[in-house]
Picture 1: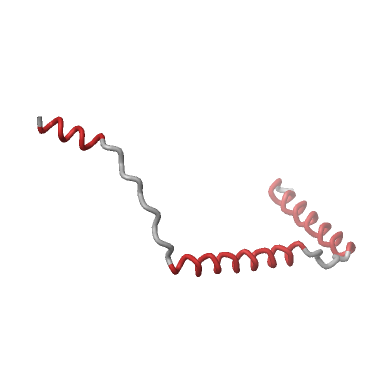
Picture 2: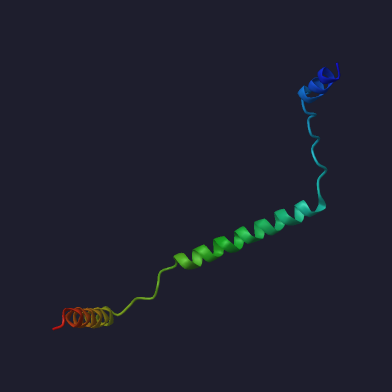
Amino acid sequence: MSRLAFWRRGRRSPETPTAPAEDARAEELRRKLEESRTVAEEQHEEAASPETPVDEADVESRRAAVHERARASADEMRGE
């Protein structure tokens, strides 16, 4: 008989939890979240702004220097 009572107690449907009372900190957290979203949007807009133009000749000279160093390193590994 006691086993039956124990079994029935375990099968009872769980009580529905009551909604927690509104915490005073919740509104503060919502406000902080909104502020952080605003800041993130501003930072995204700044990052999306066009970059300063790069001198094309400077890019070509840097590219040539990188290729020359790569060729020199490859020749050194080959033993040439």
